[in-house]
Image (tube, rainbow, N blue to C red; front, side, top):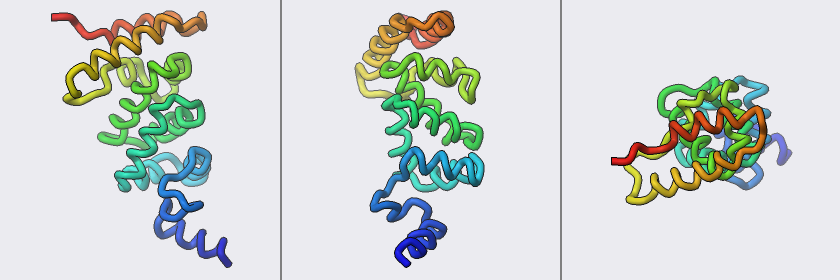
Length: 161
């Protein structure tokens, strides 16, 4: 009976109370996308600001499963949700450059993720991001990603006044 109640609660409020967590796991999101499609899942997640923010924060860590979530949600995103996903993946760039660069052509473009992912950042934040990202991109060793990393670095680099 506990399981039936959990399923009923899930259909009414998808993430509330799921396994005692307010944010669904990456594997749960991927299963929902496989079952329902990216658009309804992305819309439902985006409608819950706290949940979507937590998911974006997880994507920013650059872990493979969360980058899979980003790539799986992207086709169902639009407007603000697409921009949030782009910025979250871009913020993962200094932590996991090869994994992030591998997403180019798989839902994300060079322009989506090779940018400064901030709107009105605190002083020094964008500069720190640029420094860390350029260092990470310079260390990409996979032959098939070296050219993409160089192209990305050009876009990430802020013009100096």
